[in-house]
Image (tube, rainbow, N blue to C red; front, side, top):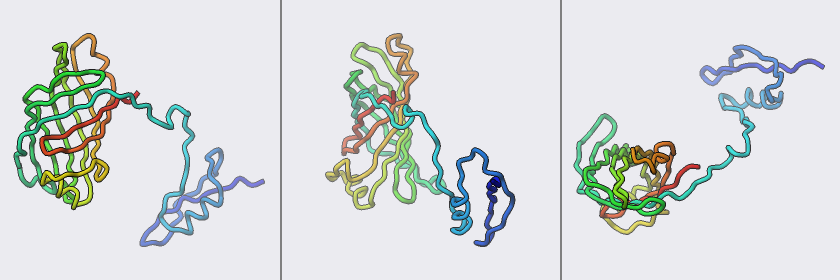
Length: 205
């Protein structure tokens, strides 16, 4: 039985150009897939990657909820295709596996895209009820329909389900009992209230 061969096809001005061929030994590619790819134009053929069961889902463990008080935003102006602004974080608190207060002096540097999506880049300092300090950095995206974002900007009621607000966070601390924070990745979902955002954070196990 002849070994099936599969052509590598490039496209120029919508026309197929054969640039090479490869014997499909152990690649899990079928002749039908190759023919369909050549017929349908420059589209990627569907493929799968075999994964261990442990990689097919994420295990999230509740970490803490966090609310912040943000001063009126300071507008920087146009930064190329983006608009920049900064929110000074004056205070806040967190509660969960760790609890305490947010110290003054943090800030959230934001970039606004043409579609009005907000990209966040924030740095704050947490102080636990035991007096231990933790540096926290987080980045995130807040986006949604223009009408919903307009209501948010005006401080009108908006449900968290009406728009997308997600963050990723990392921590740094010298507190001996909390050094495990230095070695985790955290994710969170957020909601923007008139006085500032509130987040629910989870450790990615």
